[in-house]
Image (cartoon, rainbow, N blue to C red):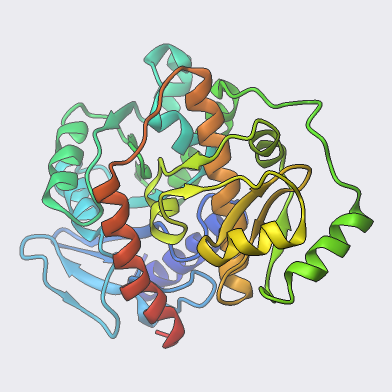
Length: 335
């Protein structure tokens, strides 16, 4: 492909990942090898639905320098590492897909997938945790790539998929999510109470007096966590960034109790409802619903395996602060 075709392909890939539920909001990133010494990568803090070919940055593999109207992804060093270490890799995607994120926390073993499945994925391994954009993460990814695997679970973060082409990368991302869903160990509470819609509408109407954008997220995983009266602790970077250290549980579905909880947190578990979330705008609120469900899926998986797999308080606090100061401001400014 020529430069313009590659840029267009990257933009279309981001939208495909978004439509398939493999990324949300501005999280994740996509890149393609441009030539022997350069690669193209998506910009930082920009919604995939609005990225245009001219927004894609051109980066130098050797120096790390870049050109373009927008700053490239903060994960670009990981993409550069993949192109430097794997000569056959021409396309790289980093996703935050739900079930792969859960398995990346704990429970993945080579025996989870068949030999044929691992071959289709180009080999699979797990990279230890490092904060986004840090040398610790780069070193962890270098170590993981040295094992030769093209599909890498990034603990507490997501997945990196290296491939020869766009088609192969997308196939691997979709296949991985199906396989991880099969291997998921969480147990859903089949008898979890579910509030009737008429009553829920009445409760939300009252909550919206104080929190106009509040809405319910009613997934099986969230209903189960609420029924278990079990707060969700941050295990993944994206929850830490946008929600913070915990999604608390209310003791009832009373509108006043929900409103009080939303005064302190943007997401709260509610018995019979699942979760009630409230962002700064509708896009924020939708993203919070997705993150809350993913966090519940991960919590159920790790609990079933007897693992905590939580981020440290310091890492959570730092990421939440950085998100609030950087990415939220970028969005508000329309960058």
